[in-house]
Image 1 (cartoon, rainbow, N blue to C red):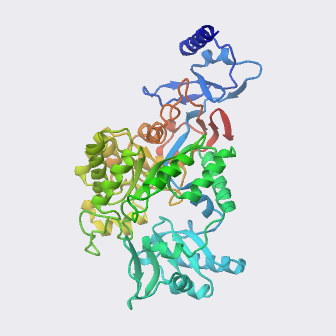
Image 2: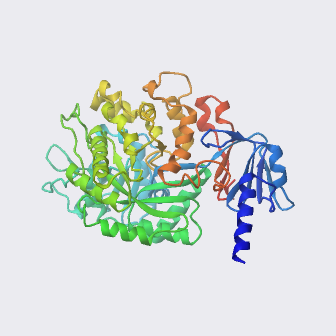
Length: 558
């Protein structure tokens, strides 16, 4: 019986691999389309046959006919464009989803708009003990430094806590400062800064680790808010064609939400969770990270990465730069001293973790690359695929290091144009000469490194097509004329951008054998778009919509 079973299995496998006539018909067939498979030769197809969760046929229209039976759902594409579904390698869906239910300043461009929205919210929610908001844009305020007095005038009796769009600053009123115990005599915490007025008093803006002083006394989201927030985020991401992502900083409560969502069958995406690493506990936290990794594995959830914030952001002078800022004459600082970072990364690598770096400044990029290099020397070369996110400014000498180290550059391409952040808050701090190396996407890609892309939502739009358009044009998505591009030599091709948001990001998350391209035997993860991206002007890419999203053979958005 055993030998007969093995023989049957071998025969079935042989027929499957040879593409022989199927004994079982497909559950779903999509035909008469323009399918960009993203396989190694970057081939095109017309039809796909899906059986269960898998692709069992991909090829021309005549070849799919034999897969169609009486029960097969046949989807006529009528020439529509099909891609593997998108994978976002750096995003914060849980916190973004929670923010969707709160006071949101993302679209507000003036101080007056923000203050009016805050006053209206406070008036209409008299029972809220804290007024919580998010996504105020740094360029709205001089030096990205809003004042507590502005909030005091409209909400004097209740604490107000507003998180900036980039997540590296908070704006609070006097009541929140009082509850947090922040006074003139409070020292700046390590890795953070309390902005102060001319009298040395806290001005109302806190940077980096100083934000924790207020977060510790502010209310945490409830489990219900977390679950609802994640569902809202997943629905939005699925509608934009995203079926996989790496949440780039999660704690125990967030992991619990992801696991419960996965167990309940509500997690409509593959998820790599990058656990937050505390710079104050470089060695002792590893046991906890391992325990959480072991206890938070599901069908689609894997807590296998660790997030390290190496520095802050340029706009607030908290990114670590090799040369001093023009305005402050200081270089910023590393949140992890090199020797501490090297030891921690070496230990994480030994324990089989993927490391996900936040590195904005060129000094931070160098320090992170050095830590990986040191880990390689001690542990040998492991297929650990460390992710380097943001990498806003890279010293030219470092660009060639990513490939040999097996490091994954992960840009947020939507930022790679001269918007207010770049024009008003970045270039003046760096000088034009150094600004040449802001988001050098093409230079890094041309070294042969495997590249991933991500959005950093809720910092910016989660729509992959927004980022892809900017990567191709180096102009804003609302700029339709063919004007000057921002560092045009760093533009990349549409083929390259699509690969980075599909098979490149699949590789970055160790999923390349499962998803990221449309090939026989792989998971049926794909999207149908409203227009063929290769047949339209680059300035129309972000106007394209996802009309259908399929994950593991099931339609999750239509």
